[in-house]
Amino acid sequence: NAGVMQNPRHLVRRRGQEARLRCSPMKGHSHVYWYRQLPEEGLKFMVYLQKENIIDESGMPKERFSAEFPKEGPSILRIQQVVRGDSAAYFCASSPGGQAAEQYFGPGTRLTVT
Amino acid sequence: GENVEQHPSTLSVQEGDSAVIKCTYSDSASNYFPWYKQELGKRPQLIIDIRSNVGEKKDQRIAVTLNKTAKHFSLHITETQPEDSAVYFCAAVTSGTYKYIFGTGTRLKVLA
Image (cartoon, rainbow over all chains, first blue to last red; front, side, top):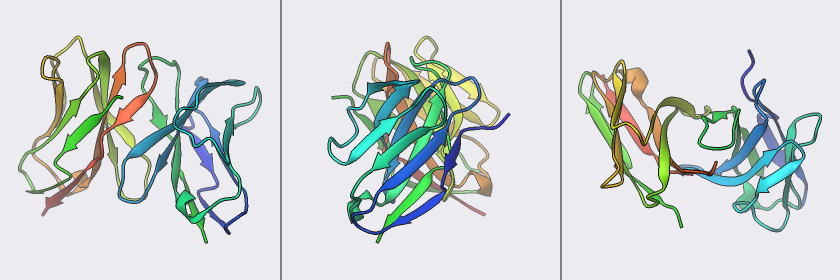
């Protein structure tokens, strides 16, 4: 019974490049959430998706960031033209239901922008 | 907007002592309160949670209490062990939503 999977675990990008982060939810979970964690800080909500739908992207910067959760395959968080301030750990979590259901976190992707 | 305050930001206790971490939430419609433990470089892991229809929940050495009137909830760890050392996050979830509002975290250090 695999948990939430994320890849890559570590990603290094130069300024201006694109970063693609992938998240496969737990089996049976159809709700995915992305969070950003800066060093020594808490988790900040970015976006909530269900299959083929973005439910809430209120925590995601309007420019350069996008997310999707296609019918087949993992959820993808995409950051275009990365800047140094994008360096952080990006965690995704999944749950079986949207409302106040337990969220289980993946191992995170640590993005470093050089 | 919704806000969760968490205190203290750091906490050092001697092995065997108790540790208490407190959170205050702003949205009175919050009805679900999970606690996560995050070890260095690892994922946050759910350790205990409480819903607004109960005042206390216990799981071995860990307990959580909820005071809805004061909008406070607390994590209690008894008989602390070195492996309890980690960052602990509280969160509040508003009824009818899915969004977790996290506290800023407490770095717990258990001294052997």
